Amino acid sequence: MPEATRPRLTRDSVLQRALERADTAGIDALSMRSLASELGVVPMALYKHVANKEELVDGMVELVWAEVEPPTGATWREAMRARAVSLRAALRRHPWAVGLMESRMRPGLANLAAHNAMMGCLREAGFPFRTTVHVTSVLDAYVYGFALQEKTLPFDSAEESGQVAAEKEQSVPVELAQRFPYLLEVVAQLAEAGYDYDEEFVTGLDLILDGVERRWP
Image 1 (cartoon, rainbow, N blue to C red):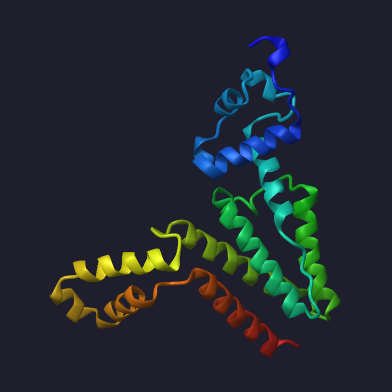
Image 2: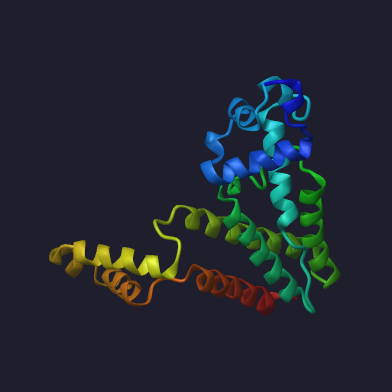
């Protein structure tokens, strides 16, 4: 490619294109070579901005953390609820990041700020240190676990879940339906009403927050 037509790369532009590629094709489809090809440069050009793929992923995860809103609200409960909803929304936009958010050995400023704000919200509300650790751990475990399960679902909406459930209901042999009546009940109900994961997420989140509120102090 002639020098005049080569795109001018920056670290930000490299990370943003990598993020977009992972969003559409998945993290396994991302390599330094494929990213360079998409940007119209030779692979060596990328190494001026990121040392290797590990540093590339660090930067991509940092971009996802930057999308997570800090905990804000009139009460600690409102703040923790809003933060959890925001984290799940970021993971829905970037499902490849599920499992990577807490694994970075060189966390960036957005990552550090997000964790510090969560801890600070609870500590400033009067939560003891150990309780704060327990609450942050269980909330993050819930969000990440929910996002992981959601990532593997064969449907994207309540309507589609109803269609999938109806297909499963029709394919269940009579003898199995008799052996597992409660499971069949779930499938039958979902076939009628669908399964709204947005509603399910906030319902489970409120159950956790109810438990924290009852137990603390």
